[in-house]
Length: 258
Image (cartoon, rainbow, N blue to C red; front, side, top):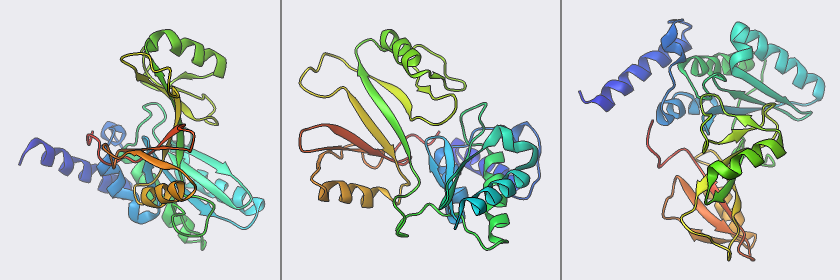
């Protein structure tokens, strides 16, 4: 058995233990690979997006949404504060799971996702990524990317002007920055090798479920966009509007599996 197979077997063991509520030790907070995390929750209606697990729970009112929020907090118990975020709206509750002190998905998050889906099924609700359901859009996360010649020089400005902070475990001079209250998109910095005055240097990255990407790209092209590059697909596709302003549709796939 090679190292990759050994690691995968270990992840499977952690995930099974988490789902069954077993193995409450340090290994439960070990960060999982993208593939291991995605494979463990896709059939539960969750999707892996940028180091998080995300799902949507359709509801009929704000009152029902608050009831859902209370239920999922109760299911998470003492893990709620360190792992769960809930965005409550009159028509849906968007749930996000992540080990916040690591900014990563762990076996604990996988176990919570399975338990939350089961608890909501018990009351006639469902967890779903809202792909092809007639919903306004699927679950997603948006990042802003800034191309810079000197990342360490520009990063402090954006951190200050946005009121952002370092992401957990990533406080280097070229690391991404995030909204400390989780409302705004994360911002990351892409190294430039030379000035590019003829093109935009700020663009959006729209991270979507891997099985939503083709639909989203087709919609953008139908709306007048053009495909600039698919050379790094399925990690990302570069699209542009009619005036050349770029955006990337991204997924977890096609990257290293760490």
